[in-house]
Amino acid sequence: MSAFPPLPLGQRIPALPHAVSCSLPRMEDVRGYEEKKPETMRHLTSGYPRFVVHPFTRQLIAHFTATLPALKGRTLWLTSSARLAGRLASHLGAAPADAQIFSHGSLNGVTHVESPEVGARAKTFLQNIGGFLPSREAEDHLVRLGLLDASHAERSFPGDAAAEVRGVLHRALPETSDADLLLANCGMNAIYAAFRASADLQAARGRTVWLQLGWLYLDTIAILKKFTTTPADYVYVRDALDLEGIERIFTKHGGQIAGVFAELPTNPLMQTPDVVALSSLCRRHGAHLIVDPSVASVFNVDVLRHCDAVVSSLTKYTASEGDLTAGLIAINPAGRDATELRRRATAELEPVYPRDLARLAAQIGETESVLATIHANTAAVAAFLGQHPKVRDVYWALHPASRDNYLRLARSPEATGGMITFTLRGPMEPFYDRLRLPKGPSFGMKTTLICPFMYLAHYDLVTTPAGIAELAASKLDPDLLRLCCGAEPGAEIIAALAEALG
Image (cartoon, rainbow, N blue to C red):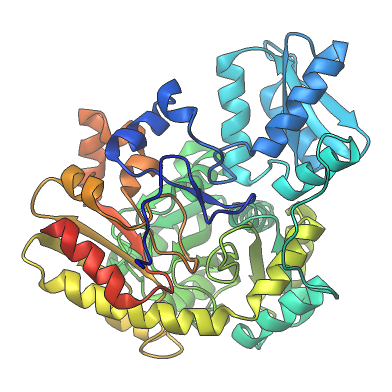
């Protein structure tokens, strides 16, 4: 039996109630999803939790809007906490949104007048900083209200879940104490909390400029753009490998620079900046360095000692079943501002819902063994794609352009993570539609996943001439495909790719 049976449009990946991905098997489906076409959306049972409101949450919202007269003619968003609800209400403002705090028992949220524009603003805000009500929390409320018979039965850690998670993380981050490992409800919330902690601390010193190294994940870009003090304080360094250019910026403006944000490697071009040199540069000039190694995993790279903080999505690799979101801020205890960063970041983050934490604790102990299988598959798949005549470019952690930078930090030469991005010499759509691999957002699970990344992350750019020009300036092909190898037999992953390439 094939490891890759056909998955219909909208099928959860994996086939679990809290799955973080869903099947988009054809490019027509990808476009329909991005354009919110009814004929596509009616098939989607769920999606990535920061982009698609979970069915359990939608059911709760429908219940309240149908039973509470005060909600007539209003839109309700349920949030991860009362504090987050307050921030959303402030973001939307009094007029014309007429945003009001919603509270029902331990549930919190915001209501506003029905308006597509206001609704889009609310959704984007919650997406950017990870503020939606967790799906397991929504499920538990439905059970309490008698709208569900019981919560889904699943393998869950029976003891102190936080202690178990931190205990395993200490294997990857041995220099930390428990107090240095801050757990968030998702990776983006960890990024937001760490950024706000650093930015507010540095702003008090007159430092407000932030450098973004290379093209990063879209919501990281959004946080850097939206929450820097002024538009001029956001500086996009197109080439993450241009150390000389970065040094020139510091030489001229070092006293104004609050910090540098880098991914390791970048998503999706898989560039690893010279973190060792960046660390020295930042420390010399009093800037903070925040690094996100989600693409590689904190288990694969020894990077914290070079940074002030590491931020990471624990959704990736540690939650390898693919059915929860969680995030991590690791504070470098030897950093100059460690105590203050720890205090401020703790105050900013949204904690992990207890059932999500228990589920993560049940999976995280498998991380190293899952990664070992993924690494073997990734090396074999990268070699196959690299020699195939119909493949143009292949990017992964060991791409020659920044291989040395990566290996300087890697815990072993094989510790690459599972992500490979590539482009084709011919049209992408026929290949994508023929391919038998699971197709959907997210990465870093036991299930192999592929997606047309630029279409899912930057549909506004791939569909306009100006947008395509912007991508081209950053050397991004709109038809770039992002593949993350899972734990299935590597030969079957390669066979599926070979079949689609023809």
